[in-house]
Length: 274
Ligand code: ZN
Image 1: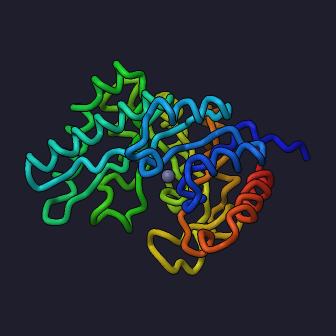
Image 2 (image 1 turned 120 degrees about the vertical axis):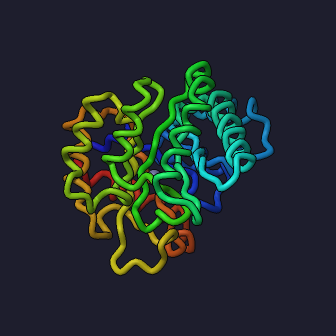
């Protein structure tokens, strides 16, 4: 089989304990040229130096992860989040990231409708900066188990509707198999997303069964219950030709030798047809 890794991207959180410097070296060693950078890896760093590091290693920065969390009970709280998202957009622009992934937010104590309204308003407020900075905003629908505190956007339908509302080439959707694999409207919604040119990003991992932890028990593609190839085929049919981003948070995998873990990811990645 041809070992085509040209569209493989790894999220830095996947190899959690590696610094950005180590991650870049190790990814490159395996022939991986795509990286999605989580903000905690560049916090308090000089963005110029981060950019130099990535460029000198010929790494393509797919996404900066993550912005969003627009909701809040008070205006002060929401204003602060808008400022934080503006900072994320500026960071993305300075390290050469194509987009910021948005985990939209949800706040206990207010309705889902109110949270959704606040999310739309938050995106509206940061969109001018995103446009002028040439940084896209990718709305990531989150599995409904996170509807309490992480996101009031839980289905592809909701994410599509929100993205379409803006009619901007700078607002689209990040499809993460972990969050949307169970959806009976999945194919239609992915095709819809592509038709509106809103399919910005594609995240891969698998849903471990039984899941031990709601946040940190994702697993490698092929080791869980998600029909990965089927979703890859939908995304392809929708016209997606961007990077396939591996994003695994896993207490179990973080405890392993990360070199071996990364080898296993690459091997699993090559089992699918993109
Ligand atoms: Zn994701």
